[in-house]
Length: 290
Ligand code: NAD
Image (cartoon, rainbow, N blue to C red):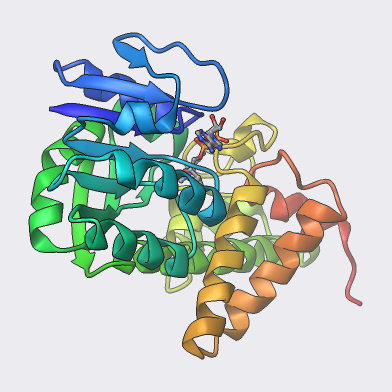
């Protein structure tokens, strides 16, 4: 396939490289100068999209996606597929899909989980929204860049799945960290806390697989001075998207709202920027009941 790939940052660059490895023709574009083995660079986004069977975007936010889509969609050949893998708001995902479909293209929103490590290793999970024929076109590419691709429903369903998952993740991480901080103050040994909770009804991915306490459980960013991993500011971005969507859909999400507020304080007023999102544990440890 001929693939246009726009947005070659921390995630996009290794994803594009993985697509080029089995012999796809990958034409890339990024605002910043980038060089990737096997990827030919174009001078503009429209040039990268011209003649492509699939255009993949991996961009910072919904506004940039809308701007790039406005340049790229008119340049694409009829019947080609526009696949956005960025994490963006559901409204932008749906607007771009409608624009693509109105221009005679297929469209998929397919945000990912698995982070930069997953992008490099080709083990991402894709959550996709769009028509069945659109998903069928991009599925073989998702299988190269990842290990699992779920077709979640129509346009925007991929973004909906992603932000619901990450809202649970943010809320659960906070619950796990505050429980550890309480256990510390009650004099409970952290290993014992892990041993009990990880096999009891308080277990979760954040406790069992990504434990925020250093030296406890499997190796996690806590064991590396809370270097990300998954940065607190990216968690804040996803929580904001979840609350924006909850606002549009009139959904009551008090825990998500509180998680957004806590991560906003941590990132914007404290020392959370650049730290892993599990660094909520040392944050809680330093604090007292207000
Ligand atoms: P990044 O900032 O490293 O990369 C974004 C790239 O887009 C940059 O190289 C930037 O120059 C480029 N760009 C910006 N505006 C552009 C434009 N108008 N035209 C062309 N290129 C443009 O970000 P990232 O970490 O690669 O994340 C990309 C997306 O993936 C985001 O939506 C993010 O939320 C999502 N995501 C990231 C992770 C992660 O762990 N980093 C995990 C899952 C999902």
